[in-house]
Image (spheres, one colour):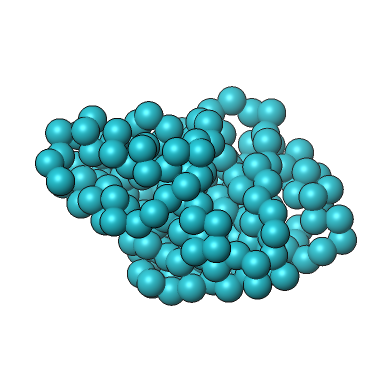
Length: 213
């Protein structure tokens, strides 16, 4: 059982997390600006094991830009939540390609549904729809370790922006309320530091947004 943060040398990259039990999945791919380094580090951690899947927490280019390179290298399947169609179409505006300054190709991804379980043997990742940062943002909750992979919904001492296309302050508040009903020990956010006080970070996010519970 292992959760490994894959570190990129590029600034402003999303966090990438490799989660391994009997199977291994990568959560988010970074922008693709450092794909060679990221792939090298993933291979080092896998040490000959296959990468079974990539799961994107949402469609933005700083999280999804490395998808093409990683899928090509590891011959794995790719998944996303409600943002899947934007990724399949390679929608430049919705992907926010101006952030990384290059065109992203349309990529085939399968859509995950709220409540779906990705069983890795020693980790059980439950898909939770958490719209707000984007309409199709998801979080992944490990029912074994009580860890939350929150994408850009929730950070250590902060919450995601809602001023991008399909973002919604009201939906983000609703997503945090949903997360407040789950026991969260460790928080693995899309940017910034990991927190061992996940429940506290959810409460802080709600207070920051002025949401009464």
